[in-house]
Image (tube, rainbow, N blue to C red; front, side, top):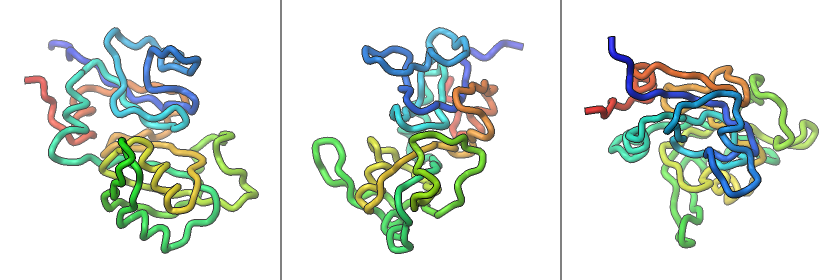
Length: 203
């Protein structure tokens, strides 16, 4: 049986690491992870250096277009720690769409999204980026179908809160699960495309 021509991985990107293998800056890199990635591996759908969680790596260059530039938007879910207590009014504002500044200083109204207050996820290890337990703060679960630059951080800031910690936990049905920070999991090709709800554009 022929071997698949591409390989697919998810990682739990720790904070203070960029979503790339090479940088001219003194930053943590994907190559610092304790894993030997094959030549041609690259990240799909980046997370900024302070953000954590699910990041896709693959040798298949088609995946970016299939996942983020197709006609059907794909859901991305995040756990978000913000300072202070979030009111029901603010939840509705975030859910319905809020004006943020995007490239060129233009105001963009975000698409409706799912936002709920959740208990602190027990699976998360403590990190200094997180609000101290004795200071009022709120954990949110936010599910979006778009990804403007720093979108969640901008959304909660406009709503009057500071994003202290941001963890991506799933893209469609591809989930971070119990993968520890810095951990790598390889996923079989058919399963990878099934969980992301995209068709394998090999032909």
